[in-house]
Image 1 (cartoon, rainbow, N blue to C red):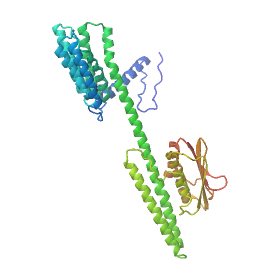
Image 2 (image 1 turned 90 degrees about the vertical axis):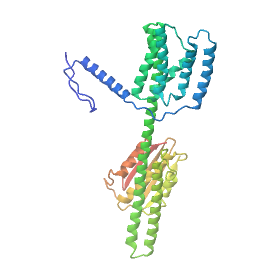
Image 3 (image 1 turned 120 degrees about the vertical axis):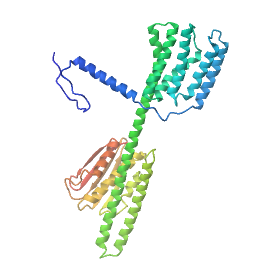
Image 4 (image 1 turned 90 degrees about the horizontal axis):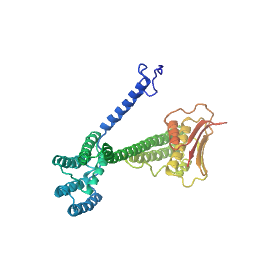
Length: 409
């Protein structure tokens, strides 16, 4: 018999195939390993800590079922051990409001009490059957798998299985009926596990979104500081160069430096405030097309900034507007740092029914590798990727450098 060649999966956690084992035995071993891993994960599953206690609707349900229990216990003729049956049913009903907060304890009480009565009836030879409202026991396996830990769930299901077994043994049912009764208990348990898993996936998705929002804020912090610090540095250099020939120039430069520094502080405070907030991190300032237009009037650059807004740009969502602004801001900052003899930077935003295209182009000298893959360019690429868009950067056909991004609406 030919065995497959030994191999190593790309996943470093995957075991190497042992060629000394038959293929069928190897597959069986892998299946057993996966089952063991699943059982280990189930056993180590922690108990949920955010489960709620008794709610108003729980007590309303308990009240309605109590009335039905008392009516059946009093007026039904063939109730065996009537006081005990009524007391047991009331115990089951009173456990309902606590099923989320104490799922394991309620399963022990409910199924332990039921199993005890069934065992006693077996020993005494009494054909005992509980009240109709005892069917509410199916809610407790659901609660056990929904909120309890893996260890407690395993023990609780064992107690529930014992209770079902004693009830079926008392009535002399076949093994097929045993299986049917077991499924009657296991189905709500499986449903509880399914709901728990789905909620866990949703929670992980929310955490991932929150992490992405914080990464976006980190990029905004970099863009904001880099943009304004570059303007401050340029104004300081211009003021120092012109101080000897024109005394008014340093004063104007200091005013622009003060304005840029104040704006930087405001932006940083907003970002820090958003980082401290657990909810949405979208900010109300610095995220509109008006801020893009303001780049053309800010000054503080060694070139003119011309902004042109064209096409269908009404009703853009805040995330898209924020991305457009940050792309323009970062591209202008990069031009201030790297453009050689640039006189003008043109920002053009054009929108149609499906997408928005932003182009930032300067008229500096052509340099093949003017920008490096630092935080600025990487941040622009990440922003565009988050919006499912495309980004192109490179030298212009004749002069300068072009940054062009296309973003879907």
